[in-house]
Amino acid sequence: MTQTQKRIFLSPPHMGGSELDFIHTAFESNYVAPLGPMVDAFERNFSTFTGIPHCAALSSGTAALHLALRTLGTGPGDIVLASTLTFIGSVSPITFTGAQPVFIDSDTETWNMNPDLLAEAVAGYAAAGRIPRAVIVTDLYGQCADYDRLLEICAPHGIPLIIDAAESAGARYRNRHAGTGGYCSVFSFNGNKIITTSGGGMLCTDNPAVAEKTRWLAQQARDPAPYYEHSEIGYNYRMSNICAAIGCGQLEVLARRVAQKRAICEHYRRVLEPREGIAFMPEAPYGQSSRWLTVITLDPARCRCTPEGLRRALEDCNIESRPVWKPMHMQPVFKDCRVFGGSVSERLFHTGLCLPSGTAMTGQDLTRVTDAILRALDGQPCE
Image (cartoon, rainbow, N blue to C red; front, side, top):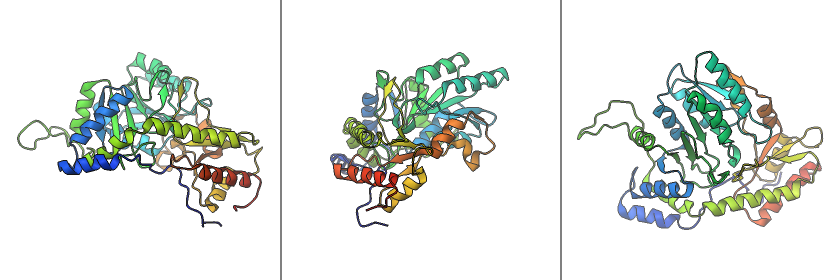
């Protein structure tokens, strides 16, 4: 095992340089608790960047999804259809409301939610007199789902489409930014995302009433009174003014970060694609992925190395990589939940690996990663 070289992480934070200036301004104003001028500025600037008119800054993407469901009145007895190939934070808020998640498999061409399987699920539940309360679709690894097709399926039944854009800030769907067109969209600013606020999220919507109710619920659902009065249960889901200050600085470099992520993916493709048995996550023809993470699959019949073998070989070289998300329908906590399809996401889980995609990586770092991968594919140990 060689651990003398610096560790290369999967997707660490990367500061742009002006974050400290915004933080200093926040400290000087003495707004160091939740809410404040930086929160207002971050919401306003994110709205301008995405083109989505109403944005509410929150403590996490998971919190934003929870509030999206709450604004719809989701509760016990409801079903919510959701992508199975995703992180658990995309679907756990369904259970917070007491509703039941039902999972939809991926499409082979995009790895995102399969519209045909969604149509099958919606038709089946509608015929049984159970219209799903919502659909939550995940933009996987920076690639937008096919929003228009999904909306065509949902609209006749009045089913709201919630876009989980946690991984797709900076991505494009047709001629617009990721997360546009649905009931609302949710973004994440966790430390591993393309931009970060240390921890945080954003709910974005065209509907001002949805944004207003989101902010109200995020502030303990406090009613307008001189004393503390509450007619509903709310949450402490507000974003800190300090975290928002970081976000203001990060937003300045988002377009540059997308270009860097895409360049990283192209480097991997140029070096690795000629090797037999390696394929890359395809890019949908209807948009431009942010390539938040570069993801490959290894054909077990044509590669000498399995994904887990490659992961371990990279770890021996002090390089972090990670398996593709384990589908939600395979998770023990959701073992009793229904799934439509399942084989595509299962195959991607068993054959896929996420490669280091940090935008602060140097050319030398990228060469180190690809050299380690090539050696592993040839059955050679880390140098």
